[in-house]
Length: 483
Ligand SMILES: Cc1cc2nc3c(=O)[nH]c(=O)nc-3n(C[C@H](O)[C@H](O)[C@H](O)COP(=O)(O)OP(=O)(O)OC[C@H]3O[C@@H](n4cnc5c(N)ncnc54)[C@H](O)[C@@H]3O)c2cc1C
Image 1: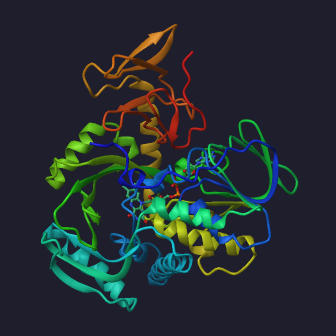
Image 2 (image 1 turned 45 degrees about the vertical axis):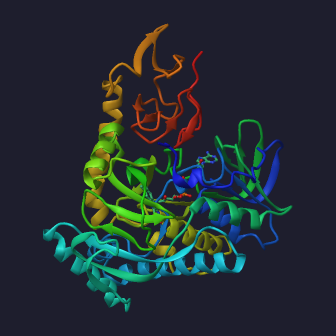
């Protein structure tokens, strides 16, 4: 069984980019090479300006290579939630934005002839719980009121029985890593450069430009696009109080019959599915990161929820959830644009963001500017979720300080002190001990061992480290050393 995503395992790994080795000056610096950063880079490909895209690991190594890779506007009960919080007009505007995203991606795939297993797929929303039939009807009514054709169903095309559900046409599935790598390849030129293994560790604002520091060089830029999923800095934007991370596990199991539809249920436990070649991809078992330390238990729950115990791939993914269900796309300061908070729908929203960002930078009107403005005011939903979010943030932070050496598995790994410092030790199956300090470099939270993927994970803000402390995901800008 592999503990990387099926996308990471089935992409051609050629087309690596060198790290930055000199000081440079650009008009726009895009930080983060996921679906957002790469789509934004693509949007500027024909513009006569200097653009640099920097990625701290490899392109697509973050959340974008670990999703279920649907591109759909049917996103659980999003329209009911938006309707309740903001009213019908804003719910419709969000629907319109997602439809636009679908058009943008299909146009790119067609015009650039991108080979990324892109397929039209019907999206299904269903419930397995009779008490949720009303919720399904509510969502269907709203979607239908947008003049979208919806069709009611009693079972999924693979024969799975449900209590109630409906589907919409003309949504998509794809291979996210192939898409990302291809659009970047199509956008590179002398003035449009990509640097992998290049992380921005500090940003300084000068009068009318920024100085962005990598470990060895400086990038001078007029504008910055923060496409780095979870912005690593706290002040002055207080990201952890505006959003929280949700962690989920995904599995891929081989199947005899494959289908082109994708489906998601409206309740927890989640059972979101799609097929890729001869595999069934299932997402289940998701939780606020503060309560998702025990990866083994999450996967046990997933197996129980899905009745699948035999699978070929298992991996986790994190996404940033906002308090009012809407993404954060727009200026957070002069010449500083943020795009994140996609509430697990970052393929459509990341691609859409690239066009909003382009309009913002070009001072062009964009109809979605206000809807997604990261500086938008408090609303009903934010007010309800704000205290819960503060509680879960504080809970994970304090818990990580008090319960320093959380062990869910017997024997391996173990925690101890060496020279007065807390260390975490993992003994691999060749008997080699891997020792790292038990402290996340981001904000000093202690680590928990993820037995499924054999990584050390920070339960506060989602940074993840390999057995030797190299940061492979998340907001930490540093590896964990051990000297
Ligand atoms: C279980 C699960 C299933 C999902 N399924 C779907 C789906 O079916 N459809 C859908 O639309 N969405 C889905 N999503 C959501 C989607 O995966 C994410 O919203 C999306 O990939 C986020 O893209 P991004 O570009 O913002 O972030 P990322 O892909 O994480 O990219 C950010 C990049 O920034 C880099 N970076 C960070 N800090 C720095 C720095 N200091 N310097 C340089 N680089 C840096 C990171 O290494 C990373 O590569 C799912 C999410 C989860 C959790």
